[in-house]
Length: 244
Length: 270
Image 1 (cartoon, rainbow over the protein chains, first blue to last red):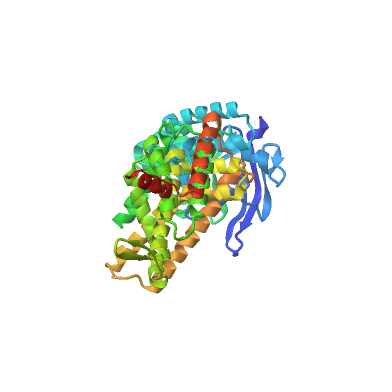
Image 2: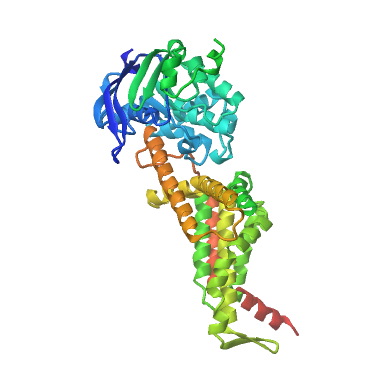
């Protein structure tokens, strides 16, 4: 099962205005792994995610998803396998109703209508949002929007899930439900977030970014107990570890 | 402020009416769209002084609001909100065109007043049928039938996105105005420089959002076509709906029905 592997080699990216965002990042994520990407504001977390699903193309270096290098030609097939959940659900939910939005991906992938129907129902049921099917997105609460945004990606049956700040703007209960939901997924997951407790719950591995570099890459529990490393990267111990 | 917020809430209310199930709602969206287009074209094509000839057209919005269970008060309020545009278009006619064209008892009515009244009536008729179309069909269905009727995809996509992001844009603007007023201590007016930067900010934010949305669309395989799953089935009743109303509009356009009724009535008097 090599097709769930993400391999990034010496990835560099500089914004058109000259601001460096990624300064040479390398890592390899294997099948079924769940990886947290943490770091200060502007450390390059979102930029990194955008490179993995091909929304941005690197200035130098390469991204490999499974057996394919990420190029213009492989882009459509890579995007079908890598599902990206954006930070602001309003950016992700652009269709008139929840149903249309969840059906958007599969219809573009060319699934026949009746199959799309069952994919949509399955995706919405998985996130517990089947009852929202006919609602327009602007009528949803923050937690509902997040759940539906995840469904829009699930309906494409991706192997890899990328998430940018999945818990931002959620109340504690909605956040708990999100964590339980993500825990139930068997996908390879990359979660960029400031919510270190969420990383502790979901990811056995963590990558710390600092100004476009990988400052640390290792077992979550080890990284989060290294006070000096956290301090240097504008982070602090997850609340749950603070007593120890 | 509160006014803008309540306007935002009522914005979606019309579209929600489209979820009902009435004889009008069951008609194929395309049938309603075509009929509305014929209505608007015939109404707009009247002579500028014509007033009585327009009266039979009121029948269409009346029938649709009652059969389609559309609250006429809601439609009326929305017409009022838009009415300043029509009033400004016609307001100078009474001053410019003073030729007396008809008499009601001893009072002479000038051509300017007639054309002004005609503009207002036309405005009320066309806007109300457009609103009723949305209330009985729904915005997406209207967009989709436009696409089925070979309107270029770009326009349809524009319309769909305009409706979706209108709410997001207004909320964004509201937040900015709120932030401004909290720190401007209820200044009576917005300084032109500040206004400029507010609007500029809004534009930049909108452009950034557009980029993010585009990225989100590309990630899910967008290739220039918005796929919508709706099946339309037109039946004989839809054809009858178009035919009946179009025939009525054309007849009412060619023959001044109130005028004929009037002469008939007068002739019947002893």
